[in-house]
Amino acid sequence: MTKIFALDGIGNIKLTKNSRYKNLKITVRPLQGVRVLIPPPVSFEEAEKFVHTKKEWIKRTIARIQHIEHNYTRFNENSTFQTREHRLRLLKHSKNTIQIIIKSRIIHVFYPDYADISDIRIQKSIRKAITEAWRIEAKTFLPVRVKELAAKFGFKYGTVNIKNAGTRWGSCSPVNNINLNVQLMRLPWHLTDYVILHELVHTVQKNHGKNFWALLEKVTGNARGLDRQLKKYNLNIW
Image (cartoon, rainbow, N blue to C red):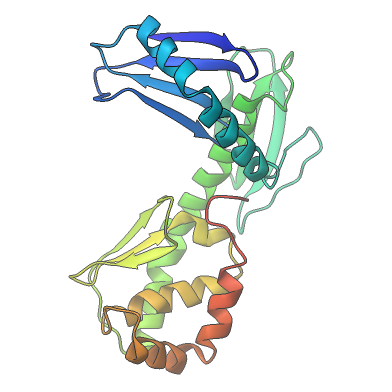
């Protein structure tokens, strides 16, 4: 169950009631606006009253989120975008829906011919389509590259898992499974390799102590420098 209500000074807020929600919660996220997650025992009226009590917090959070959104790529009718293997095509169609088709190394995003491409729903769909193309590429490239680098430097690992996690470029589990983010596919090749080697070193050194950095330096040749380069990229903003 969904409801939209307008709050003075903020704009439209989406209220969503679902049995999966255990607590009343407000979220403010880039390109998603303000949402209120409502568990079944709470009425829409109670949720609206709760939102009013959090109005100043919402305003402050929106200001911070808008700063983040400013750094996102804004797509328009003439935008070009190229992944390692796929090219983006933005096309209008006569339907009321947004449709994504990835075929023959082309990312097709169809949107209604009457719609403004700057609409947040269309922008999110474009980003979703590009991320899916990265996922396709990641599943082909990353496991092979892990195998190559592990063989070259003598590391042993378990499985390679591809995820779209929001907090890490990669991780290594206690049993040496390597988890890699699909977003690695938008990094320069040498930084993708750096993240993979970083996680492979964790199969031997589980913390970030002196021995970890010494081994990472040995296999990369410039561990600290590469780490500084990686920090220039934001995992969630592109």
